[in-house]
Image (cartoon, rainbow, N blue to C red; front, side):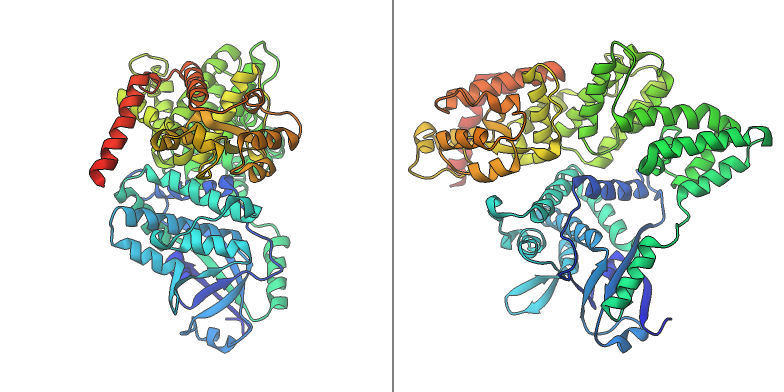
Length: 589
C-alpha cells in the first residue's frame, strides 16, 4: 500500500456505510446527469442481472471513486477507519448522487409495500445520531443539498417537495432522475425490486482511492482521466476478430473496421452490446457474447461480412436519425426521431435487425418504424419498467424471425384488452404518473396539430398546467372551476397542458389566465409549439374548453397509435368515475 494513499475495491453496501460520509467541495461542478445518463446506468445494471434465474454478469464495475481526507491519514494505513469520516469527492460525484437517488427510490417502494428491507436501505443513505433525526450521508451544496436531503434521502413521512419556481437546474435534474427511477421501478414486482436492490448492493462495486490532500487528489484525478488510454472492450474484440482473418483480406477489413469506429464514435461500444442481443447472446457479457456470435457466424470473415458491416450501417442510421434517398425518407426520419426521444434503447436491437434485412426497401423500413413507434409509446403509457419493456422487445425479434410481427392475432406488438384499459387509466393523469412520458406525448401531439414536424428538442421544453395545480382560494380559477373533484381531475387532464420553456413555466406558475397567456407569448423564444399557440386565442379557460381539448387530443392519439380509448372518451364513464370518487371520499370519511 502506498504510504499516502488508501485503495480498496468496495461493494456499494460498503461504500454507503461507515466510515464513509461524503461532501462536495466548492470547486466541484453541480449535478449534471440527466435521465439519459442515469437511465443508462439503470439499464446497464438490469442487463448485468439478466432476465433468468442465473445472473448475466457476476458483478458490475462502476469505476474509480476518488476522495480526499486531510486528517487522520494514519487510520487509513490500517484499513478502513473505525470512526466516521467526512470525505471530499474529487471524482465520482455524479455516480454517488445517482446511486443515492436509486437507493432512496428502492427504499420508498419497499416502504409502500411494507417490506422490512426498506430500513436497511434507509440506513445506507442516511446516518442517524444527530438531534433532529437522520442526515443524508451525502452532503451537497446550496439548493442541491436541500433537495437531496428533503426530497430524496428523507423518508416519505418526512419528505417536503420544493417550490419549482426557485429550483436551480442541478436541483431540478436530481428530481427528474428521482421521478425517472420511480417510474421505471414501479412496474416491477416487489421480488424483482429486491433482486435489483440485492444485486446493486452486493454485486456492484467501485475502486475507492483516498488521498490525504487536494493536491495529491488532483494529481490522481489527472492520471485517471487524462493520461494513457485504457484497453476498452472494443479493442479486445477488434484484436480477436481481426486476428482470425486471412492475411489477404485483413488490411481491407481493418480499414472498414476503423472507418466504422470513426463514424459511430462514442456509440461503438453500444453497437456491440446491441449486436450480441440481436444474435441471441444478450445474457452473456459483451466480450463473451461477441465471441459466441463470431463462432456462431462461422468465423471472423463471415462475422465481418454478414453481421458487423450491415448491422453497423443500420445502427449508424439509428444514431444519426436520418434516412435519405427515397420518397419515404422524410417519414422514416420522423419516426426515428420519435423513437430517439424515448432515451432508452430496448427498441434498438429489433430495429437494427429489421434495417439490416430490409435496408434496400424503404417502404418496409417505414412500415416497421410506424409499428415500433406505436408499440414503444404504448409501453411507456403502460408505465412498466425497463426490464419488462426489454422482454417485450425480445418477443419482437422472435416475431421478425418467425414472420408473425404483422400478424393481427400473433404479433407481440398487439395490446391486450387489459393493457388497453391500463393505458386508458394512466392517461387520466399521465403527467402525475410519469412526467417525462407525458411531455413526449404532448410533443407528439404537437407535431400532429402543426401538420408537420416542428423538430422541437424535448430537453428545451417543460409541461405547464394552464389551470394551476394549486390555485388561490378566492381567485378567478375557483370561479371557473368550482367543483373540487372536477377541478382536480381537469388539472391533470391532457386538455389542460401546454409546452413552454422553463423560464416561461417558472414565471407563469399560479398566475391568472390573462397573465399566463402574456407570459407564454411575451417570453417565447423562437417557434412556439402549435399545442401552446392555440391557447392564445382563448378569452377564458373553463371546464368545457379543457374537456373538448382533451377529447380532441385523445382522438388524435387513438388514431396515430391505434389505441382503444373509448372508455375515456365516453362521457358517461367519466361521470361514473367522478361519482365513484365522491363515494370513496364519503366512505373513507
